[in-house]
Image (tube, rainbow, N blue to C red):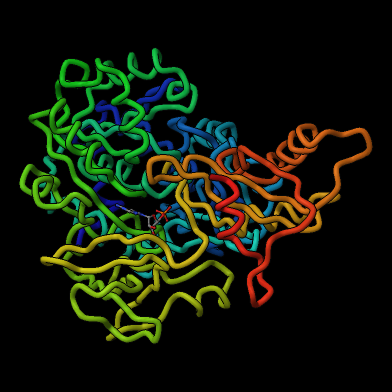
Length: 487
Ligand code: AMP
């Protein structure tokens, strides 16, 4: 079994001056990463002792984030990566739910690094929690997915084999925030192979000119992003091999990979391989993968998400938890060593979605799917979870937060779709506007109040005040009728 932390640490000896991380906020060598994370580990041991309580690491794409992650791991404290764009209230809720006694900021990491004290060596075991990734929860409370060192190692080993990554050769593009588990793919594949991770910041991504300048300068060989981000890049005619001459593979995860996107990428980057990978945070980034080559494009107008990684089993269950036959559509269930041990401090939620199957940890994904020709296909969701630009959103999370705002009696949130994908959210709110307030003013007020509670991508673009909700024959809110009112 790969010794993940020792492997990362080995680059400190073999290639101390090699850049481990590059971002507009600074550069980090493997020597800096090794000594910096040692210092953070020592700081955590001094501050927290050996209680293994989670540590929040908050920032954006600064090199200190990686120093914080590894420092936490070296002192046996699972880290909770958060992005600074998150409203304070949500950060506080996450820290509380996680039972975190300490929050590492970029500043506090810098100060620990300046102290430069060496830690007491500790050895993480495969069952020890390595990180806790928080994701949207349907009741309005974010839930923390516990990923052990064993889960992460199982995922990384598989990716190394599948892509035959060579040591020290690759530059990995990091588009996703560190608070989104897609970033685990680029970060750990890069660190384990002695590669260079190049992070794009939110500011770069928001400005096309800056974005393409940064991409051209990145030297990317392995592209890791959501399909939505690649779609955004393809809007520029100059996004091709002349901009990224070294790129050899595109790795996608997190949402549906549209056929057109894969086909266009193959045209613009004829020497690169395009891969679709699939999986929830609860099964460590990705569990299936497939190379989308010409033959797959010819045979499948809707692209498969691939074959399961070796050692992990995927079943499709009917409504009564019985495995279904090939071709039948049901719920995707994942069982294997990459499956999380559950939601942190939430045995109730854990019991609902996790169970044991033939001795392995298993997770009911809530995703619908089917097998055909040995490939898994994703057929949508069982519930009200949506993906917006790759971000996972429980509509119930937005609704619960809206209901807590003054004057709101009830709320229903629906996705606004364009070309088959979710483009934005729309909230229908039962409540009163304030005296002399127009519906527009009320919508601005509610959106602003929500932005203080939720990440920006969860704030509905449209808010409509309604007097009543349409109801179904059995008295439930008729979400379909509301959706039809949008078209
Ligand atoms: P997250 O936990 O944020 O990674 O989101 C996981 C969910 O994203 C999965 O349960 C799926 O609903 C969706 N998803 C992930 N990868 C893919 C893919 N390749 N194709 C379609 N949906 C995907």
